[in-house]
Structure formats: C-alpha cells, structure tokens
Image (cartoon, rainbow over all chains, first blue to last red; front, side):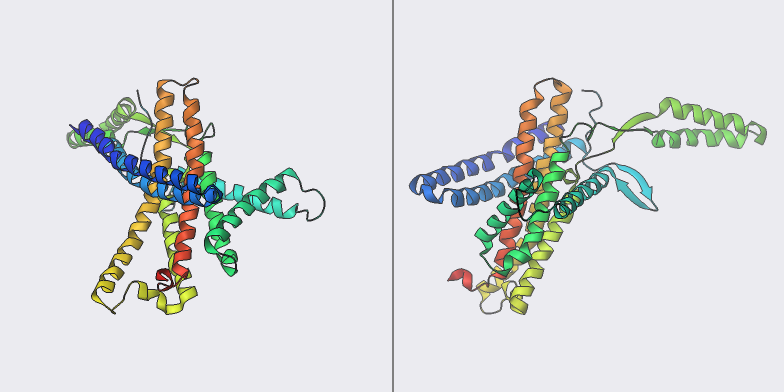
Length: 70
Length: 290
C-alpha cells in the first residue's frame, strides 16, 4: 500500500511541472525566434522560470523519498 | 538490491562534546578549505602585466562572467561591489559541493559501524531476571552471555566518510536562511525603514492583504530554496547509487553527465535567484509599478 502511495506521489507530482516547463520553453523559443538578438537575455529568464517550475516536481520527489526511506 | 546505503539524513561520524559532526559537515569543510586555497593562490600569483597563466585565466573567466551577470540584472554602480561577494561565494560553494559528490570515493569510502544497540536492550531485559536469582559469583558468566549475544545479533551499518554537503537538508537550509536574511539586510540598507512598507501597509485593505502575502512568501522562499537544492542533489545521489547497484559498468555514464549538468544548473539558479531577490529588495516598491 505504501509503495502505491510513493509511486503515485512522484507520478502525479510530475505532470504539472512537465506541462509548465513545456509551455515555458515553447514561449521562450518563440520569443527568440522573433528577436534573435535578445537571445541570451531571454535564455537567462527562461532558465530562471524553468527552475521555479522544476522545484515543484522536486517537492513531490522529496515527499516520495521521505516516504520510502524514513 | 541488498543493503543500498541511502539515508535522507547525514550520518554522524563523531561527537565533539554533545555536538554531532556529520559526514556532510566534513565534506563542506573540505570544500571551504579548497575554495580558500583557490582564492589565495590566485591572489598570490596575480600577474597584471604580460601573459597570465592558465589558472589565472580560468579564475578570470568565472569572475568576469558572474560579474557581467550581476551587472545585467542589478545594473551598474555600487550594487556590484555589494552583491558580488555573496553571489560568487554562493556559486562557488554550491558548485563545488554538488560536483564533489561525483568524485570516486565520496559516498563509497567509509566506516563499518556495529548497529547493536537495540539488541543489547532486549538481552539486558532477559538477563536482569537471571541476575536476581543468581549469586554474585556467577554474574561474570551472565556478562559473557550478554557479550556473545551482542556479537551474534548486531548487524553492521555502513557510514560513508564523505557526503556532498548540499545533499544534506541542513546545509541547504542554512544557505537559504543566509540568502533571505541578506535580502532583508540589503532592503533596510538601501531603503532605510520604508522597506517594511512592503509588508505592513495600511493605506488600503487590499494593500494590507498583499503585505501579509508578501510576508508569507518570504518564508515560502526559504522553503523553496532549500528544498530545490536538496531535492536535486539528493535525488541525483540516489539515482547514481541505484543505477550503480543495478549495472555498474558503462551504463552510469549518461547519468554522470546529467549530474554534472544538474549540479552546475542548480548553483547558477541559486545564485541568480538570490541576485534577483537582492535586487528586488533594493528597488522601491513604488518604482516597480512605474
């Protein structure tokens, strides 16, 4: 029963961030396509946004790890 | 998968008085000494004329790229000299701590400790009944009985000697606390006491609630900083341990590449986020809406 909880925590917790990162990178690439000169600025802000979105997936991962190992 | 030594909390190596020194503390001390060595040797061999050595060029690349990053976000002026040391220190400390977990020997060289404390208690309980009945001349026989059951029933635990400091929640929490405390310090330094009008604002009910939300979000940032860094690096450690327990040859290579990349990105993200928060604390609340 605990194994199902661990697997569901990580699995469901990764759906939201994955979609969020996809949307972020898509709009980042569009912005670079429109304005190739500002590519490095756009890239810096895009990586920042990706780190925020990925942090949510990491929260789910930490909960799964705590369930498994503690 | 027998006895994969994965533990979320860092294992203690020895005690100094009542203060437990863990293996992640030992690693972070090693990294600190390494950073100090790098800094002092760069300063001692500094060549301002002629061709600089490769080591000096490498250090210049790191410092210059971080400086240009700080200037692009915080603008030119005295902010670079004030924010610079913090950002570069965060970057170097977190980067070296993340990457030191990939060296062979970190996490694998360790001590085997006997874990027999729980077993001793149960044998003591059964033996105290016998001691009451038995006279004093026979207590030595009971003691040897306890010792032999300790050796039989105790099982050994592997305690690694080194563990990347950022794979320990204590270190990442400390870094997050330092970062957010410096945000408040810089806010007060640049804006004097009107910095607190960001949090406590009685001009209108909506601004009051926004102020409370800002206060809550300061604490949420501490949690998010520490868990982002801890989760990434600890999950990387677990991933490498599991993969190497399954297939130790050739297959871990792409995962090592991923870990190098993730270690670098996480240190960059921590530094850039700290820089952005430092900067937002120094710009006035009203200028943001301009």
